[in-house]
Amino acid sequence: MSFRKRNAVISSSISSQSTPSKTENVSIPGVRPSLVDGRPTTSTGTASLDSLLAGHAGLPLGTSLLIGEHGTTDFAGVLLRYYAAEGMIQGHQIHVLGLHESWRYELPGLSTEDKKSSSKSETPSDDKMKIAWRYESLSSGGAPRDRNAAQKRSNSATESTSIFCHSFDLTKRLSPTNVKGQIGFHPSMSIPDLPSHTKDSTSPFKMFIKNVAHKLANSPPSWVHRVIVPSLLSPTGYAGSSARPEEVLQFLHALRALLRQYPGKLTAIITLPLSLYPRTTGLTRWMELLSDGVFELVPLQSNAVHAPPPSSKSDSKSEEQTQGLLKVHSLPIFHEKGGGSSEGYAAHGDLSFSLSRSKGFVIKPFYLPPVGEDEEEKKKGDSSKGSMDF
Image 1 (cartoon, one colour):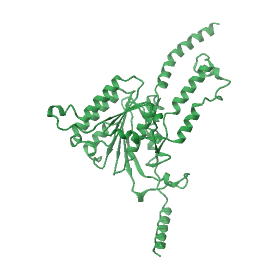
Image 2 (cartoon, rainbow, N blue to C red):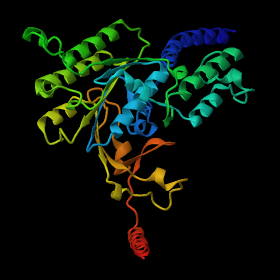
Image 3 (cartoon, helix red, strand yellow):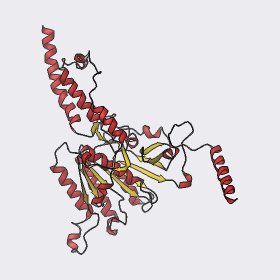
Image 4 (spheres, rainbow, N blue to C red):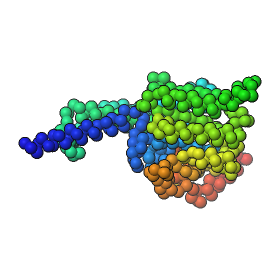
């Protein structure tokens, strides 16, 4: 009898101390603990990009990404659409700088495969621990729990973990029925014809930081915010005064301060046109230092697109063709706190990306085609030209 009483007291104290931490992780939609150190992470909307983020399997809250892109393509813009669509489905608050409200109607919709998988995951699994359901808590030292309560908790846990990262279809648009979050757009151009003493207060960067800080301070702790800054310092969306170092660097400093002030509520992704601001300039280097993760997209020309190696199995070669190279310069690792590793992407070597309708934006290792295939393609091209001449 004495052993049972002691076991009951210990189990009640352990359960009372352990249940709050579990409910905190499950209560926030679209957020789960990191696989490395347990810090809260959220999805970028691209599964292959989540797998590269220092082993966290997602973007850690309180961090930012800077994605630079060469040329006139808009692959980085596609990543921003995935990032915004994932936040809208999860019920997050999204703040966009420099885009019009019509951009929300360009967000991709859910793919049919994702809808089928989510519907299957929502159905409870009856085959799980039918006999030994009483011993689930005994392994951790707790008392046996109620069977119905255990099933409800397991079902809620599977629902929250199954919808961490959705798959999207670029040919579809995000349906209003799937939208749970809110999105706000802020202008990136300063208001003209204002007195000189009010120009500093009406800077688009400063107004954006004030609005985001106000909403962060007045929002519940369970609300997650996402900041989107597309094509930073592009002449089509920003005035010439915004390109001054004192303007853009103060903006990035202020954004970094908000990320550190709210490490469990805010993430940010910024894109930068590297053709206008190359990485050799001091301004771009400072912008990279103020960002937690830095990626570089190098699109390939149409005649330089490579197919996958013959060993890979794919339904259509067009969807597997490499459309560009991806360079990882830094990852969101808390150097002062530890956690995270750069071994995940270093083991793969050179990385490439491809964009297709069904699979979306996919990051994969880069392979060069065999030498014999190039010669055969040239011979086929020469023979086809000769037949056309006749």
